Image (tube, rainbow, N blue to C red; front, side, top):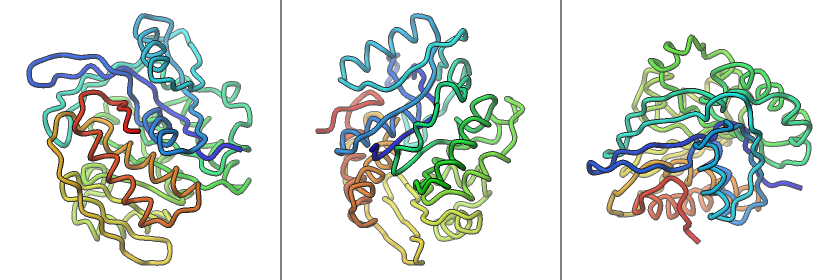
Length: 286
């Protein structure tokens, strides 16, 4: 049985760091799967890439990392994201492509074998992936799986895509766990006060909310109504891309293995502090 199944975006990050450009494999859902596996979980990922040199680069990098997700090749360009990764909140320019073309045929019924099924706002923004993934979440929930959602929503970008929040809000209402950042919360809820953010996502139906705040650490509100606060570990910031995903991937792995929420979050914060010290989105931390 799988511990963590992640369904959603895989893409290429083209990063500008200190005036230098570098190319890395990324995508929130792929990242979460990669880091959950590093934390000891039996993990799987389902996503789509294009039949192009960007897709080839993704396969090459993942092979070098000894990470073997399920990637389907579709007749669309591989999704490309340009990032100025010089702050805690990277600024993206997104060229959307193959990642959105996840279909039922690719998923089959893999969710039946997973303890936790994860996706993101990005993955839920456009068809056909939006409907495919939302249906899988509902089926997985009925089958007893825990649902995890990364609400990595950006209003201006979604407006350009002509996307609405309906599927995302429905996914959050199903979620046993969501992990927003402060920026996610400001974009989706219009608030940035940490306690208000936690309560806001609870009102949307999420059972457990983990709010990542960069150098200010993490605060969480559990299903039982308790608060957990974990400070960030001191680290020299080289590249923040993927740090939140490493936190979440580690948390999901630990929860799937029976650890308590606070212990899982502390492990995630430790991993994230290592990720920000290195250039790249997928960083070997163990």
